[in-house]
Figure 1: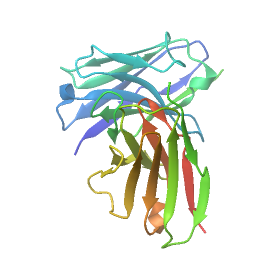
Figure 2: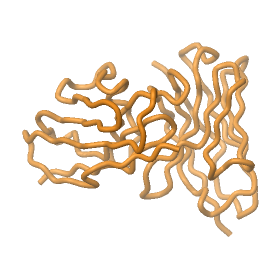
Figure 3: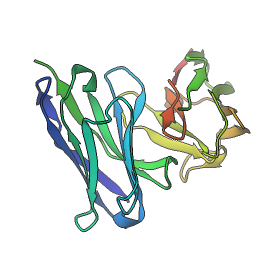
Figure 4: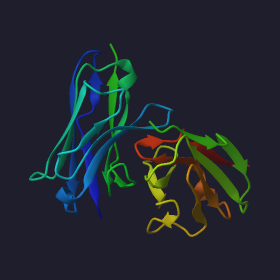
Length: 119
Length: 103
């Protein structure tokens, strides 16, 4: 069964940084598009960022553009999200999700890692 | 960017009822439409992709239809385990969600 395990969340002050990781297993990681989706407490889903299988194509939501950087290491079966200049409105559960195609459906999701931005 | 709307925002129905949720996109595109189910405190789960294709393991009481900008998720006979929030997704945009409760 496909497994996605996020880590790296926590409490950080406004303006601070965090790096999220997603460890993938039980599928050929380098064959798939990967995504970060977030959900603020009590709110809906927001697509944060996407990276193609090779890493050559990347998308960011306007709300995080210029502050967040997505990357992947296919040799380590890992996905990352570097988050800088964090704001209170970035507080959310961050999910790693596997995509079948660019902007396509997300067939497997991790359990999520919680990021809280607060002074 | 595409905007997605869903209606209703919430509904209450009885066990066995037929439930219909509508999703509308602000513009048509090549991107297919997907539906997700999120139970309280749980991770979103893919139900339907490419408008009407049921994800493996999803009960057949769930179905999807539509084209262009208007899409529908139908639960033919609501079960207690279907209490959840349902989200549509087209491209990089999710709908705001429809919360389904038991009456």
